[in-house]
Image (cartoon, rainbow, N blue to C red; front, side, top):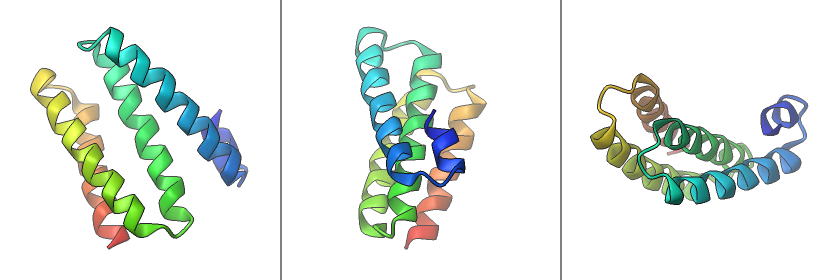
Length: 101
């Protein structure tokens, strides 16, 4: 739902939806730490949340969160080294850090 709100320029609601998604997926990841789908979905939701933070001009916070996310992605890559979505998310995160500098 957050993506639809983002596309409709309902930024505050999108941020809330992404945060809810992250909370749900973090709980699922704790219960299922080796579930590839959950880890990738969590990464996607965090990327979307950071996108909203950056869009709102809070670049310092966006960079900090992207650096934390990068660590999470790298840890997930150790478990799932062949996952292309994680590799794409890592590249996207590096690009976003450069963009927000």
